[in-house]
Image (cartoon, rainbow, N blue to C red):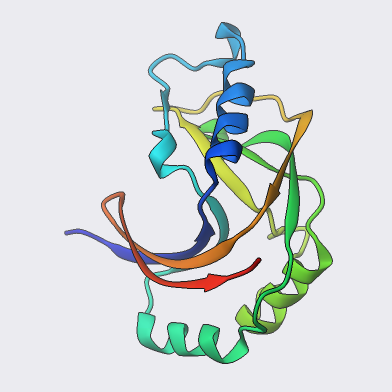
Length: 167
């Protein structure tokens, strides 16, 4: 049975997508796991919060109610790492802008803790089994967010439910 879940995300501009491609291309053959597959660039997005399987109506109302209006958010994506035992390679930010962290905590009630750090990230590659990625710092890619979106996902198919302007 298909599982419906939700997340809060931002989609990259053409310029940022180009920067993501360049950083992915700089990984050498030794960095690629056997059977690994890149996420399609059209699916690249910056995950800001995984919201799980929930009723989207109250969530959307809460986001509407606490949306402060446009506020500038610029991230420096400067770190490559992995989740899930090395099955998911991501590009993320070592430092999270205070405005974004504060909004996320105030609106979603999600705090960053050592056990559950807030890590805005773009999933670049998925591996079929654990892979020993080595987390590394890379040349920063600046990304000024233009909008945030509430997204529904079923079996990897995304539907944008609502967008909020950031810039």
